[in-house]
Image (cartoon, rainbow, N blue to C red; front, side):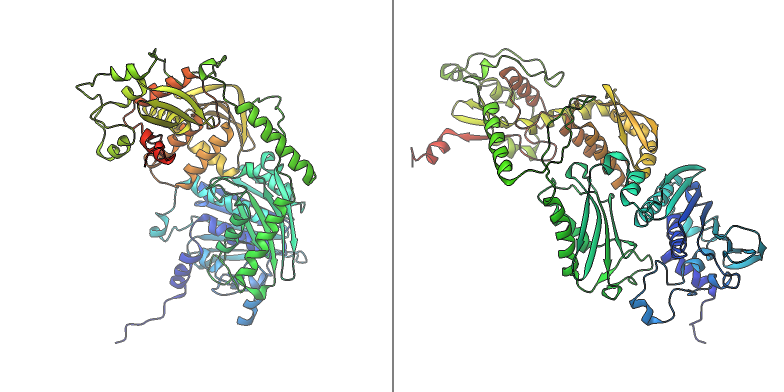
Length: 632
């Protein structure tokens, strides 16, 4: 007897559901896209328990004809295409006819719909793919879908769902993406009866951006407009200062459909290449209109992946659209003190001539030279920099010279035995059997700073260079990590609280991670409308760049998903240490230099920063003399 059988319709639909319905957000995406295809200009999404127990999508679109409601839940039933040829020119968001059948096979679905010219609507209820009830009903024009108990009959899939808050964030993200792609439609999203998203539907992209991302983002967007013979591109891109550590703030739409494309992402990165720091990604909301014949949207059931027939043409068009926009806007920052925060600079977009630009650069260079010119002797520095608790107390030092160095005695015991992997680094400074790093620092003459970045020391016949930022970053990392491990209070309260606007997804995530952020030193309160008011920051982080540091840590945590917190603790502490450390191009006086060297010498590994860059290098006198051909 043969082994091959034809699967029943319900089993086939459940298999299809595995491709189309991954989580509650997948259901929301399919139903909302149907509402858009139905011509709705107002769409409401409501969820409970992350969408697991309830998803409700209401629209004021054209509605279902009564005769179509039951057949709409049959597999591959669709009003969008009639044959395979139509796939080449499809412009609707949905067209496969799999979504409703797949959703109904793994949940209980209630559908109520009425067309505007009908006196009555119709209501049907389907469970596990079986129609349980169908009748006439009174209802407003449009369509309402209610999906209950998702995956109730597929426990294997149900167990892979995340926490309610995580699933709710995915739903919110989908609604945000669709809302940005359709600024002419008013969207409302409710989570457990609370409104988390509301866009005006006034067909203004910037209004939608403002509603979803807040004023801080919206006011730093630049409009994009580009047309060539094959493609039309428009939308908004962000100024470099609102770039983020991931691509979560990038939304690309092709013929009205939200997509992900490596080609387009690469073009964006290339256009911003000289404008952003490494591992930073710009804010982008980009709309692309292209002949449907030149793109295949039938690559994957989720329909977010597409294939272009002319990838290089797409790359060039996107690149030039963004690059031309960036070059057409001045990125010169006007130094203007903010009334509330002295460490912030206002951004002023100015139009200046090429000659003025060159002159301004020359003036800037001249001023920098005057400011950074070293004093005749570093000890003549009159006003020490206020470093707060950054440095330890400084020990008195003898005046070091040839006689002093010759009188040094070798210590019988070394205070620290360096780890084997650190020996090669330590050998760059000194032979470990002769002196500890503390001995070398104690018996070195401070020459000064090079470029206000590298501390120069002379120790006998050696020239020692210390990267002040890398060194202090290591000091601060060890200090912060020790406090964190001992569960000591890391909070340093701000003189002026800081309001930070977040997206809906970020706001929910921040609430979920309140205890972890508090442990790190970030104490905050909700300020309404997806904003928080930040009361404290990690100790010693300083006043500058607080907003950037907080958002950077949120990006990092969100990018790790459900990964154990311990796996990212050090990386978070690295970033806090980097923000806390003294920067390059900062003048230090002798007392500050000595204090930094004291702190560095006490560490177990003083030879690299937390990211592995060297903190110290040395150059022997002999090597210098070779360079100058004094010896051969």
